[in-house]
Length: 334
Image 1 (cartoon, rainbow, N blue to C red):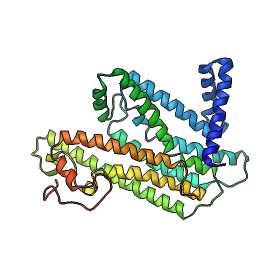
Image 2 (cartoon, one colour):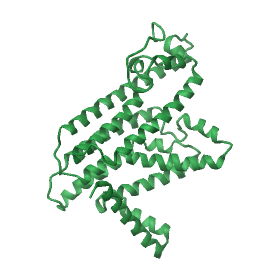
Image 3 (cartoon, one colour):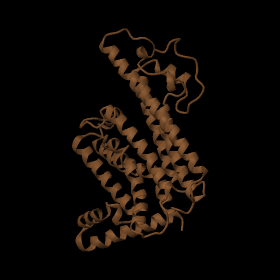
Image 4 (cartoon, helix red, strand yellow):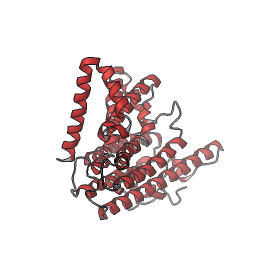
């Protein structure tokens, strides 16, 4: 049975269980009872456990966004909940061994995947925190612009909020780490191999690149506003308003490139576990890549409106994929 069929079989079985319970106790009671019984990984199938967490986080993000009128609720969980999903499958493997339900050894691939995702989550959580993302009113600067566009159509604003932000993006956060589920279902069938090594090295290199890019941007933005507050004459990148040196010399969005590529690397773990280059969890990295295409378009539209010189930067520097640097905008960046 393929991992997709096995996953579908589990989820349909869980849905039937909820439906049968709802016939006697009602839907609200059935769902709450199911969640109470399945949110702890040790007591349930890890797929059902992950699905329960997905339902809860989706509902909470939507409810909180309505209460606060802040669309960035998913952003606050972006670096956290994928790590939780990977930990569910790694913890279940360990719990089976501890309970002697299986006689196999620990699956080190799952532990490796958890370690990689934990490093990613810790770094991104810190970066989001230092930018004020976890404050009550912290909201990505792009959401207010989208809300303004949708303002004449309030019902469409809430439809967009529920479907695209709360539901779709939470599903996406599960899909990008769904290779961990495939590895759990294939645990101990294939020992660690060269593809695992390739996946780990690529993942760590891309994580390092993303860290460097975010740090360069952080230093630049802090220095820029410090100069502005001190009323110092701005030159180079500071006068233009945006960074064009460092990694940003070779890509306008090196952090975006690293983030997208990082999850394609994560997918390779499922290739190592199954021996097949293609499985259904490829959809996670693919959909994330598509999301970044739209996000990049909106980001650049806003930036170009704010900083007139950005158009020149677009002509000299690759959009996302790092490439040979074009001519500098001036002899001295900043």
